[in-house]
Amino acid sequence: MLRYLIAACLVVLAACTDPPAPDSSGEEIYQQVCANCHGNDLNGGVGPAVGAGSNSAAQDDDFLVLTITRGRGSMPSFDSTLSDEQISRVVDYLRTEQDSADSG
Image 1 (cartoon, rainbow, N blue to C red):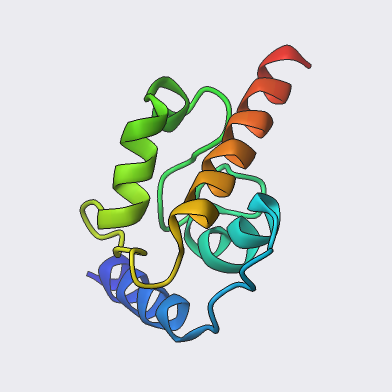
Image 2: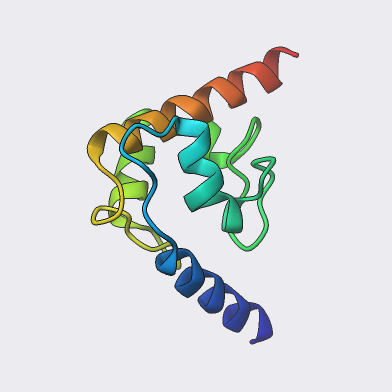
């Protein structure tokens, strides 16, 4: 029960932050919007890991875009927070990090 309460509080806090600047990089957007739940290092926290070897690394880009846009489970929707281009930059950032961790 405590875990769900903490998750709900983090979701509310994440929703209260200012949206990223339109020209923010994928990494900047991830750190501002996603890292609270998915971890600064992409290894998860309240939300699941999204780095190399994670379930998200095995999904196609369309799945990630849809998940970010509409939300999934306890993850909120970011369709009113992020533009399509910003979401694309986040997915590109995730892929770059997933690929570099797999190869290095």
